[in-house]
Image 1: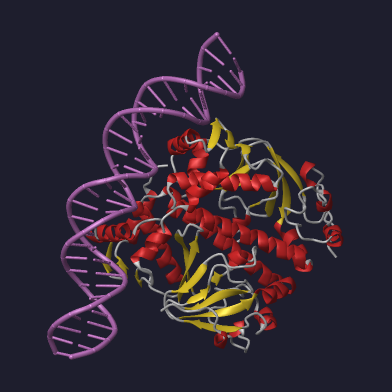
Image 2: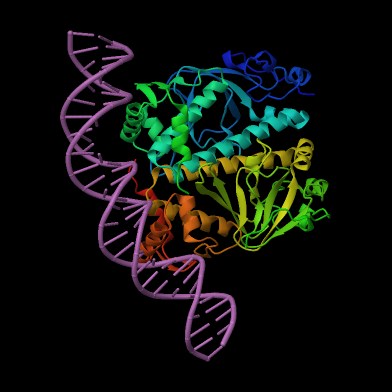
Amino acid sequence: MVSSTLRPRHRASRGVECQHCNLCDLCLPAGLMPEELRRVGGRLVAGRRKVGEDEVLFHAGDRFDAIYAVWTGFFKTVLRSSAGRRQVTGFQMAGELLGLDAIDTGSYGVDAVALEDSEVCVIPYHRLATLAGRLAPLQAQFHRLMSRQIASDQAAMLQLGSMCAEERVAAFLLDLLHRLEARGGSATAMRLRMSREEIGSFLGLKLETVSRTLSSFHARGLLVVRQRDITVLAPDGLRQLLERAAA
Amino acid sequence: MVSSTLRPRHRASRGVECQHCNLCDLCLPAGLMPEELRRVGGRLVAGRRKVGEDEVLFHAGDRFDAIYAVWTGFFKTVLRSSAGRRQVTGFQMAGELLGLDAIDTGSYGVDAVALEDSEVCVIPYHRLATLAGRLAPLQAQFHRLMSRQIASDQAAMLQLGSMCAEERVAAFLLDLLHRLEARGGSATAMRLRMSREEIGSFLGLKLETVSRTLSSFHARGLLVVRQRDITVLAPDGLRQLLERAAA
DNA sequence: CGCGAACTTGAGGCGTGTCAACCCCTGTGG
DNA sequence: CCACAGGGGTTGACACGCCTCAAGTTCGCG
């Protein structure tokens, strides 16, 4: 008994059907049976929105009404303190959600900025809440994704709180590669979408330190770095860097 | 002092009714109307469990089947890396939830340790999921609490990634006081439940640095510190420390 | 072809870590 | 009631990793 509300026809308003999306086993509908997927149909995603490189999907403080799922492209989220400090709190790629921190306060807490030309699925929160109430597997998957964000934020806290610069950079590279591999990318090579400064902000380091650390890895034969192209030659070498740590 | 989490005798058989709990507007049932609260009745909380000081509520890796809500007392959560690094990822007090990071993987990701004699409400996740599917306001509040945890973890990332030691300690004290005040405590005085080392682990500092910083605040007349008793004399002084920061 | 942004590299300073000594509380047992 | 032990906390001296500042290089793009 969802009444199909009449909405003005503009580009982003056409329903998008999850069952025809190639990301459906990575994103919100993951774990749904074909029959359930069909029930979701086009009622979850209100539409797609293009966000050009360096454009802002939403600003901290904007009124919250939708979660966004990255469909194509790459984003960063930036938290700004009242004192003007800035901290990159994460990088998001296909199938990952943006805006989860806004449910509590009703307004977004971070800026979401595209690092390359991107497209996102617009998921009005009230639609998600309604559908999740009826479709237990959808609710379950939504909870899993929020939970995953919590776990990944805590992993970031571990990096920031108890690793030295080399370890942070190594962990960062391995995490990125792992996520790209899960999306069909190479397990060893990638093109970074973010600048040294953005990496540094995420890792609590200055851009020079990031640069020096990458150069050092290069010199030790762990990887090849040429600007934003990185090829890891010895992933186990990076992993060992993380393993051999004092308590 | 080492204790096992396998303690069947703590398993309470009687349901606990949220509508008779003094925390009901801080915790999971917050925002529910009396009528809805009655519908929840004793079907959400399976029972209460006592956890003595230094005892472990759950270990990282334990199979996940319940969320816990702190009823009385005080907890810390500790994330351990494969290399043996340890990071305190948070401190939890009355009305706050433990175990949210476990929904995704099906096992807890951190250790939860009581810092004083405590009691928690045991909320089997399947019960919560079922009830949330039927009671939209309960679902909404659960989402808000997960969202709040994400936002607070990101605030911690900001502290760890872009603040100096003094700023971290000031922010930490103000946050603790704020949360205690929301629970009816004093806005200026408190007894810390955790050691300098645990504060340091949370803030990414060594215990000596925490101690020195508190001494320095004391010397400047911002607060009085005597072991674990802290009285803030100039909360605005602490706030100013945070405000006057370079970008 | 040349400008600017991003990146790299170097030299020196500073904040926090490390190591060690000491102090203060609390609990315990004579 | 006091002596003592032990853990947590404080303080000091020094070391070191990362930051700061600055110069130079590479690359993309008009």
